Length: 127
Image (cartoon, rainbow, N blue to C red; front, side):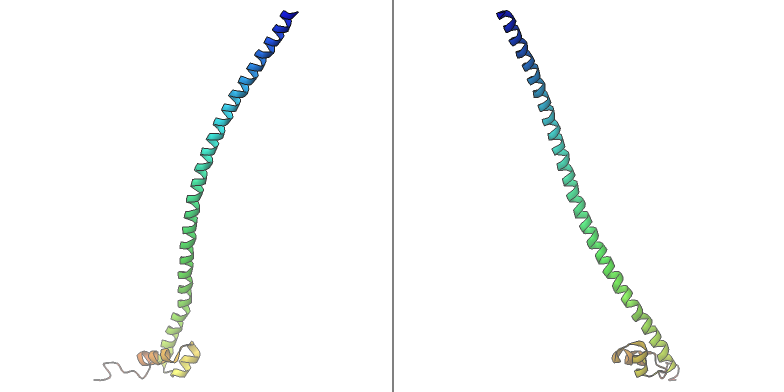
């Protein structure tokens, strides 16, 4: 009877040893997987930070391009206004009409009239 008891205790001990060894291996395997996942996560975070910096630089560049485009678009109607004012000045329109029709300042209208006005004499007219 004592022999059976020791045999059962021995088998139970062997069973516990095998089970604990399996848990030890499983634990070590999971620790290795966790370590690998932590390294991958660190690499992904590092790449994300680099991507964020590139996105910020891209957005800054895009903002500058938008500002330049806006300023170019704002300058375009002014250029057309000057061209229209030059055509009117060549036809003999006075300064006040240039100011009213082309939304020019008085100085701009005077300059265009002086440079392109119908009363301007060419070099050949002086001889």
